[in-house]
Image (cartoon, rainbow, N blue to C red; front, side, top):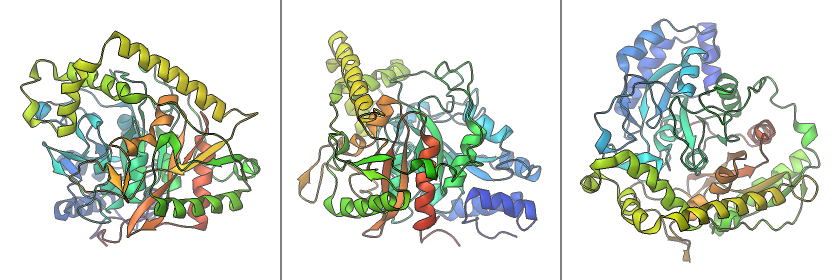
Length: 468
């Protein structure tokens, strides 16, 4: 019997199931025991009866057959809570299942364990809400796993489940991956369809896994990618993600890369960048990249973009606002109070103009003739901050600004191109992530870059404090 959850990756757990060395139901029960004993507060809801029935009849011939997975609280599973991590919707029940989760269950054979905690409405980079309390980083209690996919990151890095769903509208896969030592791929916008009945909002959200390994990430996209007509922006299906891992390495030789420690106008900890630059140079040597100098400055989207996102939240809250103000997290409350004062026709026009300017600039940076193939930067400006927040405004004596964290990740969301966070060692006992940003449709090249790092500088799949 499995007394503790599997601490390898999801693919190796499937191998164990197929060889008869582990059992899906016993694995699930070990996960539940670990979740109940955990101090991470990574789950907000457990579907024990439903999951046990699925595990007992799991088809282990499927890609994730029998694997317990966490489902981010902002994803929908029919019959489960549908809260947006907000007290206002604590009693709301989902009437549908999201495309990605449905494909994982039907095509992949995964067992849906429960909902992992998220930041309220996915709005900030710390997973701490009035509804669920504070979620902790498994590498050090009291530090955040990031957000908004913080519960998924904590559950996977903390050894509770091997893989979990995530979403990245401004860095919400890459930021927690960087803080917890996981692989975090933000795919090209539309690679995995959103919905059903998903609203597009700011057109920045890509969905995918919080994963321990590159091959787990590739297998996830094998299962989940492909067009659905209910998402008009979803892309045609691409085959062979796991099968073709490692086959792009030769074509990467000579690729032009630029190092951008201040990507997006961010201010990065000098100590952390020194280590990330060394890891980046390692990739340059291993893959035969050509490191070049190039201006990577980007136009600022300004506060107007963030404020516009609050309009969607205000619409969802409807008549509950402003009476619900006292049960919202400070960031949501502040944003909702500010948005009506700052958002209007002029602000909307400014947003569209600035996005156009950013798209033009990103196209220049990644121009095949005069630009680069990849930008190498950080996933976060520093190691994980306090789990209860507030969002850090300074470190090392440098005033960084409340939006500093997302500046590194947000450009790829606005432009819709692919980017990945790769574990790059630790600093002060906490993981740090190297972010590599590529062109649209470059995910498989990014996975091979990450695979090179995984093979030459392997990382621990779970935090040292994970149950063993």
